[in-house]
Length: 178
Image (tube, rainbow, N blue to C red; front, top):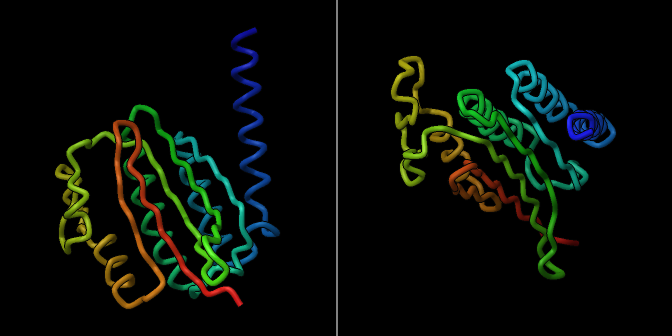
């Protein structure tokens, strides 16, 4: 009975994820292609990719190019780290908050399991810094490039944290409420 419930739970999670991967919910073609391709890549690598979408993507106050560029880098890094971890897990969540009547904040969170607990989150945005010491093909440019985009924007912030289980990147996008 325990094994049956466990397999049923996995099947329900997969159905929920597939429902979230709908062009109706991810209503921007570029984002839809990006998210579905990263989801499929992760699943093919045996990574559990959990999706929670609680917003209309058209409401996010940034260009599709900037958003897909940042998310592409964050999801690529998450997949790379999760595939080498024991848990092999990624959670991708997008939600919106209105703290007052003038500002709305969208938060895109990418959490992934990881093995390199020594990664220096204060240095990861430096050009050339990489936490993949054994990978000679890694250039350490992805998060540096994200940082260059963030420096040019007045409404984007990226916060990085980690704990024993997850490496967490939270992209905040602010917009004025009309």
